[in-house]
Image (cartoon, rainbow, N blue to C red; front, side, top):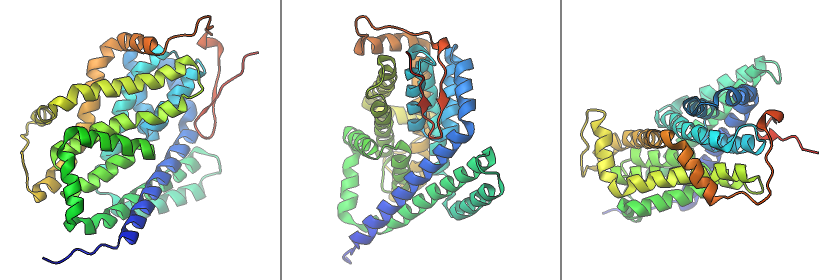
Length: 357
């Protein structure tokens, strides 16, 4: 057999550059969507969070608009820190954030990378025509970010091509058939780069080239769901107990969900298929994996987060009570009426919190 020669410098450089473009594109898109729609999202939280179902819907909308669960969760931490909404109300929003992030994954899973540069051109045109600081200008810049995001995926996909016949790489991926190893690897990777969407984009690229089995792909979805909570935890450092509780609740919801699913991963996959009137196949050829596993990954991401909502939405009070025990109040801590506070979103989407005299 021919020896596979890989130019590692070029491969790793292209992978790193593609990942950087993806993350930068997502950052620019999220930043400008926040700037253009931040007031709307703030007002939505104020009016809708009194009802747990409406709170969940708000979380879905905000995350879909921002295209980032990490950004949405950090924003939620800021709102609770400002005592704009209560921690108890935030649990329903967290469940909505979980569902809203699936929209981004579906967007990434579609083969739209060939349109990346026209999207950049469209965004530049919109930004150039619209008045500076207007919603049209912010939307144009968001489109540029979206195009760069897709361009990054395209570069990473091309960079992976030589690995298709590299034995050591294929053997390493075979080890991911161990559910808990795949979850751990995906969790660590997501914590490292602070973006579950980027991790799932890479997982989808691997799946599209037939590298991953269904159990390995779905297990990596579970790991990315845990890893994405790291951003909210970092954002809560130095904040009030209520804000810390939001981040801890995010971790608790995800971890309990993974504990519920991981031991029964194959059954989870079978049920996921049955609800769609289909049947999974174990095992599959490389060509069959390339055809079916990407769809299984996006479906599993949606299915898992919908499952969390169905299980926990009726028990948001129980979840908040558990987290309050994990992060107890300090003795003598004072409380402030959220109605007496006002906050304003900055251009970065974080909150200006008024200081109390």
